[in-house]
Image (cartoon, rainbow, N blue to C red; front, side):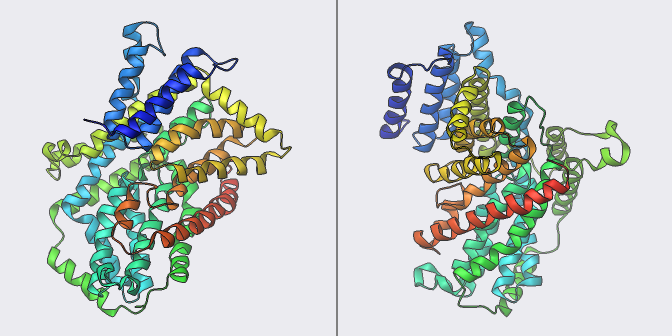
Length: 485
């Protein structure tokens, strides 16, 4: 069988119950209700891992096309089902994942990590901050947070830990591996919150915010980066200190770590031509995404963020840093484009058919009945949204299922649109801190065995509290200074 029986049956059961057994509420379009039934089934299948997410996406597209819930015409229904493949934000992430292959292929990502350790690696806390800095530098061009935290940073953490005989198999994880693994992981959600291109679901947040506000709030790459810069940097500075306090490493002085990193750099040899090209493309991407040419030379020099990603990939292909064969092997990129398109399509039509407006109205009336002003009411909404992630193993599934309704309800309760958009955007990454299944990076780092489940959940909950306070309080003040609300 190409599917897991139990999660598939649960998914099918939920779909049929909503479609046939639950009366359609007053004021809800029957097509919207039937699309909701399929949407809930799809999200349940993703959570239960009934099939790979790309396969589930193909089935979702098929169901929308065949049932005609968006369009009575068969040709119109298939056009609607495939409509999101033309969404530039989806291609922005897909192409960016392809570009990030260059960081791994050239070795530039690992070289950056070892360079920082060579400079700051004389103490264990210094190694931790080196990992954080590496995460921060790689984040803008690595939209797979799993590739960044699990594929580039974590192997370096393991190599250094084992060089100091910190090995879970020997019961010596407390020497330094536990601390470094937690720093390695907890940096990942913070950097993911700092750039649109730092994790795959962020463009989905941009899309949902734009739709909820009729494009009045359109978060550009530069606007997002500037908004998240101050709270993000403060969170990155504080986080290693909290992990050091919670799980202090037994080995605090690491004079050999710097030498270890230098040895690794020596093994890598001189900086290659491909690494220099990769660094140059990296710089071009950041300049264009930040809108620097347009700022200096005028709006005629503005380049769309997705077009910028295509420029970067084209340059890497022209210079031979990446080959078309490399691109074809990037299964995660093609997979992301497929499932992203399906989920965005379903979310878009739930909104167009009025279901999101109806559900956000329910939320608004429920919280409005408490008699709270907009600020505590919206904090309550955001916290409910964030901690609901204990029930999700996918940030994309969570955002797709809940973001639009919660954001729209917040607007109805009187929240300033830009302020609440940024708060919810930050929460959409901060929720990754919570569990060992919260995002793709977590099972990679947790699976190395350096922490127990209890230690991981304690660290995750504490960091969620610290991060949300930083982003709401300090971020809120920073956004006020910027004139965002």
